[in-house]
Amino acid sequence: MVFFAAIAEFVMLHRANKKHLLNAQRVRAGQAPLGFSNAATIVGWLALISALVGTVLWGYGDLLKTR
Image 1 (cartoon, rainbow, N blue to C red):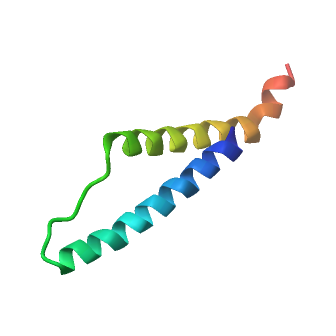
Image 2 (cartoon, rainbow, N blue to C red):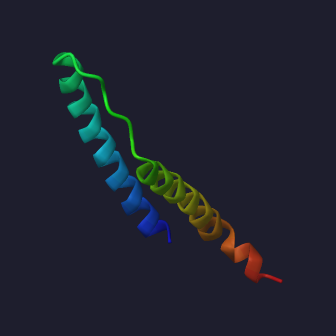
């Protein structure tokens, strides 16, 4: 779970960086910058939440098995 969330985060960071560079070119040309799509925003939040949940389970999973 953590592995797939990390891959999703890296993909989102790559897209954000590319969008940032393209928006800088658009602003330089006098055009309005574009925002992220709703789907990209949802995927980003889901990746973050699943990474946090996976990390907590990975870190504290042994404590759940002791009883």
